[in-house]
Length: 339
Ligand SMILES: NC(=O)c1ccc[n+]([C@@H]2O[C@H](COP(=O)([O-])OP(=O)(O)OC[C@H]3O[C@@H](n4cnc5c(N)ncnc54)[C@H](OP(=O)(O)O)[C@@H]3O)[C@@H](O)[C@H]2O)c1
Image (tube, rainbow, N blue to C red; front, side, top):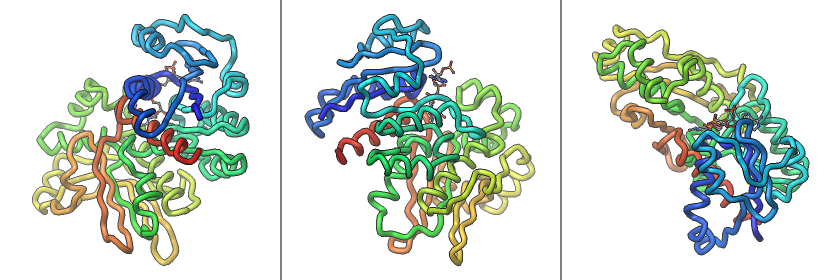
């Protein structure tokens, strides 16, 4: 079967997965029998394009990189119509994250699932706010709602717990789920002030102009909610997760940690105790001997406490064009394996 792929949002990740698919087209066909066309792209800035036989992806990438509107295969269909009327079999929802309403992504996800089309997303909004409903809708239509890229990009976390760790009961998850704040804490330990390091993080593109989502812990809280619900079946809402960011950490706190052979990390945590699941985000002083303490810079890591293997820690990138594009690829291949 040939997968007919649609992409909603042709920004960093949308272009990342397009580049990967373009570069690896022959390899994916030869190694996995994975054949595809990207037939639809819908983007707020660049426009909506559709060709049932496959779009000219190098041309779309060239125009997007030049900041120009698409010129080939342009349609005047809105997002709902392009999702419903195109011959797409799978949609990659890669528009911006809104952790308050889930919009506009949640409308795209619902429309696609109701039309019997698989959905893959790296967007935390639909995953953190509406996962149970969307999974139910997908199951009802015998299709998939896949979200590997919503937690630490392509570093396999959700697939790890559902695949290689299946059969282990996970009682605790503790992790560094936000690269920006981990980078900031790393630099603050070297002596930089919070204000200076934030400026550098913004210059490097790690932190946004409004850094609130990262530094107050809200981004990590969205990921903790996803992990609690998917890995532990907690059935919790974002508001149930206690959340504190790194804005209160002062140089004297960093010195205190050093004296105790510890290091500050912003830790997202989910724990099952006596059948009750609690989830939180907050700065913690971690012993230097713990695997999470050695994770420095804009890197992410998670430790799963399991009954059969003890602690299992995975370390890897939590953002980036190709790194997040890879998460979309792994979900595409999972859908292919099932089809
Ligand atoms: N970049 C990463 O490393 C990373 C890592 C993990 C997860 N994610 C998540 O993945 C998603 C995509 O991230 P990104 O970095 O690719 O974002 P991005 O570069 O901002 O791209 C998003 C694209 O979607 C477009 N868009 C916005 N609303 C739309 C709509 N209603 N219909 C069609 N297109 C729309 C945007 O246009 P405008 O610019 O005009 O709004 C933009 O071109 C986000 O939800 C993000 O949180 C990203």
